[in-house]
Image 1 (cartoon, rainbow, N blue to C red):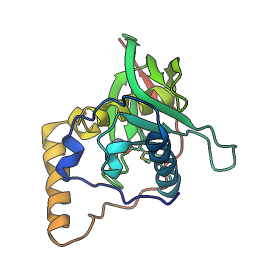
Image 2: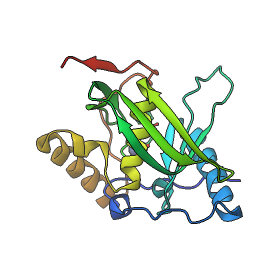
Image 3: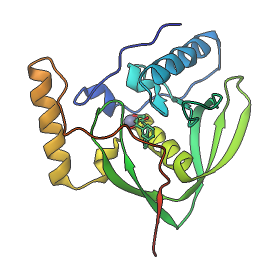
Image 4: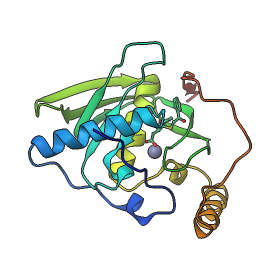
Length: 190
Ligand code: K1U
Ligand code: ZN
């Protein structure tokens, strides 16, 4: 299975609300395989199907480091059923907004109900980076981007930069940053 091209800001597809998967059939399994190829190829820790142009509620995640065995987690039709009052902050990035990072505050722990790649219903309790990543990906399924959680000024600035770059058929460049580590999110004092 080959990787698919990524969809970048300001593509309007990123604002679509993705449709629930009715049945985990061979077509969905093929989509999941393509998503893992694309995510690993792009060195991401997560991917929503809409980021490759498919408006279905499918997410792939793998937080394993370069030297660790893969830990793929497939979430189909994920739903947050519980979120903590406690919050945490993480410097988020997005494969659809390359090389741009900004701090986002979200619930520190979430419980998520989903279907796995066999169609079985599961529940997972997540904290730390996994909680950040799951919430970031579920946002994608609802047409929400991490830049929607930052100030309007910063958001307008980054959107303009990507609009200008698209007009000349490029992606924008940002000041060079070290390759992201899997740093731990920081808890926010109440
Ligand atoms: O959905 C996506 O765009 C993938 C995104 C997931 C994500 C990263 C960081 C915080 C929240 C959600 C990425 O994988 S961006 C790649 C990246 O910058 C990164 C990779 C490893 C650790 C941290 C960030
Ligand atoms: Zn993203």
